[in-house]
Amino acid sequence: MFQLLDFIGTFVFAVSGVLTALNKKLDLFGVFIIAFVTALGGGTLRDILIGRTPVGWMQNLQYVYLIVIGFIIAVVFRKKLDRLRISMFLFDTIGLGIFTLIGLEKGIEKGLHPIICIALGTITATFGGVIRDILCNEIPVIFRREIYATVCLLGGVLFFILQECNINDDALYLITSLFMIILRLLAVRNKWYLPTLHHKV
Image (cartoon, rainbow, N blue to C red):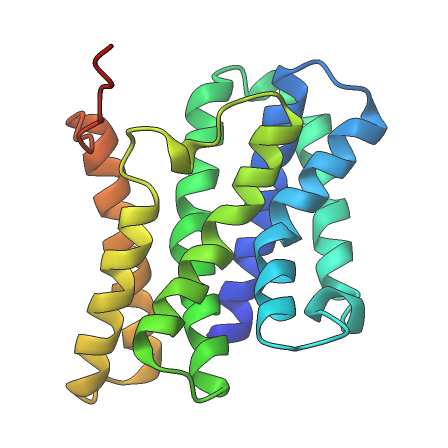
């Protein structure tokens, strides 16, 4: 289940990157680079932070193959993905839930404190999107009012609560990822935002 989630997360984030780049009218090389950094940017940063080098995708080319497949599928069927905003949002949301779990698990493997594991999960899930948005000249979603990184943090807390209840690992991954995906969908649908700070001159 863990390996499958990792592959699914890589694929959907790659597609999310392709759709964003196509919306910005980049050339094919630019589209591929955006897909690549979206899918692997967060995991690469996480691996560097925990001293896991060479980083994961350099040791397993299946991640690169998945990105290439996601790139080709998204480019070929781009006309059928007319509602780009909806498509980008759905793929981004699924990737968010899955990659948070990947980061949590990597931290647990290293024997790190749950708080650090949650931080690693958040980094894994969000920083590919941060790099994508910066390269596409957008303010990263994580820095806007949307409930985004907060979803990862709450999902991480739920993960460790359920783990204390000795729930089966597959069920643990499934429940936590669904919780984060549904929470993100509800937050956008119901326009839940974090408060912003206004500077008075």
